[in-house]
Amino acid sequence: MGRPGFVTGLWDDRQSAAAEQIEAGLDEIDLVRVAFCDPHGLARSKTLTVDTFRTVLRNGMDFSPGPFLFDTGHAVAVDFLAEPGVGVDEIAGAGDFVVVPDPLTFQFLPRNGPRTAWILGEEFLRDGSPHPLGARDVLRRVCTSYAVRGLAPVVGLEVEWYLTRRLPGAPGNVGNGFGSQGAAPAVEAVNSGYQFNLDTFYDSVADVTDPLAMLLVGLGLPLRTMEHESGPGQVETTFAPMPALEAADAMLLFRTIVKQDCARRGFHASFMSLPALDGFDPSGWHVHQSVTDVHTGRDLFTPDGASSERMSPDGMAYVEGLLDAARDLCLLSVPTVNGYRRLGPGYTLSPTRTGWSFEDRAAMVRVVGGDGGCHVENRVGEPCANPYLAIAAQLSAGLDGLDRRNGRAATPARPPSTEGPGDLLPQSLGEALEAFRTGGAARAERLLGAPLTACLTKLKRSELARFDTWCAKERPSGDGVTEWEHREYFEVY
Image (cartoon, rainbow, N blue to C red; front, side, top):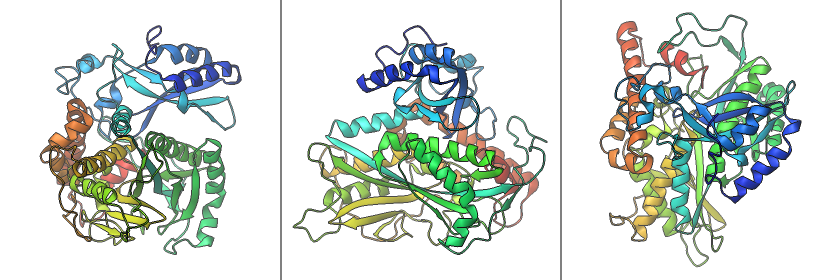
């Protein structure tokens, strides 16, 4: 289990104090689930007895690198037997890495049965350095870049997802294997949908979503709203603004708990953007964001009282950064084959271009507010994206825009773009991967580091190659969501 004293020097004072509180209360717990976020945005975990966790809290926990090697369909995409090719020597031979629990994320899981807690961890190499493939550390580095400038990014989550009712039947394990997902769960819609925010439709899901809301509040998540969206059983959940790292942690915990709690009630929750089910509408993940001056508490995007503008020059510079990086880093906000279904012209309220506008939900970047408070909403993401990478990509792009305005960047500031549509967003995973690999290569490596950039490229190439091979064999008709996508994403995400 890790190495004696492995965490020494890795925690700050807040984490050390939280660890002491955890240790003082461990007699009230039976099991602890230690989790981390893999490159795909999924929580991977081990469940420990409390006596084992006492050791792990100080020594770390050994994990297999499997989650770094498999693509979304569990095909091996990174060669770990020969030269791994991603610049991480410890992947050769699939050697273990170490997950260090973050005491600030410790949560009780209020449920029947053994008294169980959940804690998130971060990945480290065996020498104690941060693992180059760890997603949480990417966002932490971006937040540090803001901090050295006296700034703090603030993030609000607005997430759409689907609630369906499970039908009787065996798990979809026929034909399942490495790189071949079995049949998706058999489900039925909980209502007919297409009456936006209709109270009766919300009431049709309330027996599941109301207790879920109380569970989320009990976990300390700053829940704001649960509401019924357009599609059959499509739910939108929003959270109050949070510091960026806390927002990503909340997104991971939220998605994980929603799927588990709904399953216990005989339902299936999915964050797949567009399931292959009749009459379903795409789900999006809108990331609300602003920046605070830590010395004055001032919102950087809000114009001063003497200005007639609806957004400050700093705010416009931030938006310019988002637009500039939108194509290059689209892969991090829309990482699946299925997610690009939503970005096509058939869905009016989904963005297709890199434009911005005030209070326009068809734009990629919607500017919200004015002199009473201002923030931006980036509407490009899909709900199953890796929260650390998606948020890091957007905050990093915005910071680039701020640095150009303030003379810190290597490239000079550009004139603000006019309000309205800009360049076309990638229309497929293949296009997004090409933009990430070519025009976005230097930007991606600066954000993620060369090893994670190479790893993500290999994972996405593998996923796309399997999809293309399936299409060549099955020759699906039309341009609708394929059976391959439904098998690949509907259950896992």
